[in-house]
Amino acid sequence: MSNGVKVFITGAKGFLGRNLAEYLTGKFDLLLPTHRELDLLDAKSVETFLRQNRVDAVIHTAAVGVVRGKNSDAASTNKNLQMFYNLANCRQYFGKMIFCGSGAVYDKRRDLVLVKEEEFGKRVPADPYGAYKFECSKFIESAENIVDLRLFGVYGKYEDYATRFISNAVCRALLSLPIIIVQDVKFEYLFVDDFAKVAEYFLNNPAKEKSYNVGTGQPVSLSELAAKIESIAGKKLDIAIKTPGWNREYTCDNSRLMREMPDLKFTPLDTSIKELYNWYEEHLSEIDKSKLLFDS
Image 1 (cartoon, helix red, strand yellow):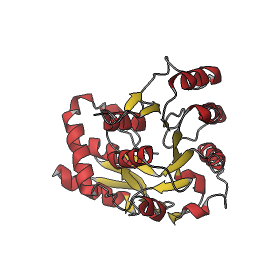
Image 2 (tube, helix red, strand yellow):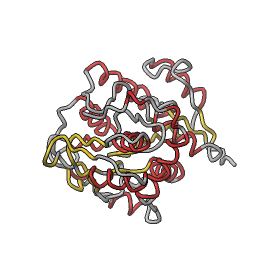
Image 3 (tube, helix red, strand yellow):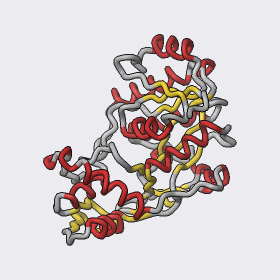
Image 4 (cartoon, helix red, strand yellow):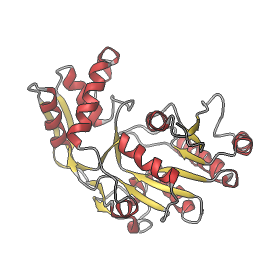
């Protein structure tokens, strides 16, 4: 039964937004306008929507031009910034905003090994996507009712299985295709249902800090993940690593989050991957084999 708190989720048709909407349905009164119903690039429309609805919270997941293996172009970056500022500049009309930030703010041109929030600002990312998230994070530092949840690798149903490693490998396993690893890397992966738990907490509680790394704090390599998926599939699969050596690590320290949420329990990796495997198995007829080209 809903608690009567009104929550506006942007990008509710996308990976994060769709999962959040499913998880939070029945717990909150959700507003999930489509792009046709509300263009976040239209500042006046955004202001009118927020002024009329007076939501308790906004969860901003919407983004354009974000594709794994491809740098966002300047036009996409400008659109993403415009959407953020159109919302943030109307913060007098809502109680709080949860911004889906990124570990990319710490500058991915180097190894990020259990990186802490205190590292923010010591280096400025050069890639357009990282720069976009960085600028938003800088703004949030002085915005009293916005919190920055910095995501590293989130996985789960509805993600782009053509480009996202775990879903790509699961789909390949289901179709008895080789699992392709471009280059092994230690990564921070978070099950999308666990992210939803974190979002729910911050909907219900004030944030003590302005930003949080949202991850398990337990690095895992792509080769380890491939082996787990092979085991879950119960079949012998070819696991091909195209480039030898290690790519730059991308992991976070989650101590700040755990101090805030000491009772938070993360779904065990084997459990979440098995759940995802079962979901794709149920939707096997919807998998487009031609899209399983994870090579970037």
